[in-house]
Amino acid sequence: MTGWSIRDFRPEDEAGLIEMWKLSGIYRPWNDPQRDIARKTENMQKTGFGLFLVVQESSGRIIGSVMAGYDGHRGSVNYLAVHPDAQKQGIGRALMAEVERWCEAEGCPKINLLVRTDNEAVKAFYARLGYGVDEVSGLSRRLIED
Image (cartoon, rainbow, N blue to C red; front, side):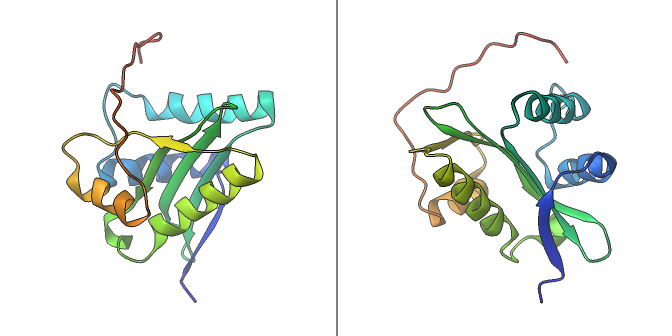
């Protein structure tokens, strides 16, 4: 028994999820987490499509998360995070396995994800899962200021 389980996000998870994101180091002040959660859940309600999972301990504490999507060309992964107290227990690996299963079932041929350039630990995590660096540059443009 692991003491934790993976399930779909529920609105009552929001506060615990945001706290876990802050503790795990993925929170950035220019990305409003409440808006990101609302955007993901609203998009999934509109389209009936997407993946938003949390990991919950038997105590009820949220200790992991992932958001995933598929645009018909590539899958994407966002907000994969594991609480610092719960790392090295296979939670991140289990979340990515769920994402990969979902993407495959949708006919998705490849998953893309972004990792901050200086985050060597996360790059090593993904390398252990078989992910490699593509010779591309990530470009972005903010359309809505949070």
